[in-house]
Amino acid sequence: MANNQKFQETLKHLLYAGVGFAAESSKKVQKNVDELIKKGKINEREGKKIVDQVMHNTELKRKELETKLNKVVDQYGKTGLNQITSLTKKIQKLETELQKRVKSATSSVGGSKPAAKPAAKSAAKPKEKVAPKKAAKKKAVAKKAKKEKKAVAKVAAKVEEAAKA
Image (cartoon, rainbow, N blue to C red):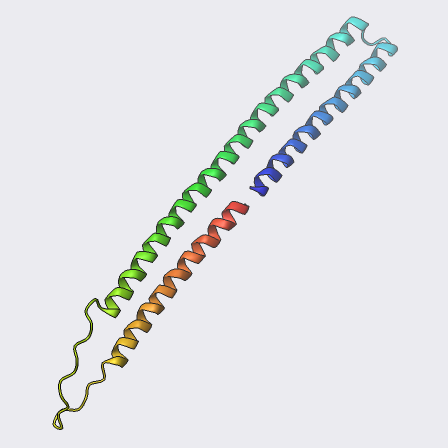
């Protein structure tokens, strides 16, 4: 948002510079017309007509420039706000999706049923190692969740960057 205000201020300064340039140009035209009148090359009525015409054209151009400037500022401001709103909605959607995935992944790893007690020890069969498999699944789910969290963080950083721009 700060950049949007900075942009607007820059455009206003440019407009004021243009108006100042037009005013200075009008003064120079007036001075040149006065010199032409003194030299007798044109009469006062013609000189006044020239100066009035320059002033009128300058005022029309100033109003035209101001109208165009206001349109650009309005359009830029609305576009920036629309982009921020859209990106914010996308981030919220991604965050809720991530939360759902993490919940479903953790509930499927932990299981909803408690594990059955192992049967009595048998000398013929070696004991299976179930715990390392569950730990590996938990690590895989955690790793996947971490990647998705990083992806959401990247999107959030882009949104903040867009908001600053």
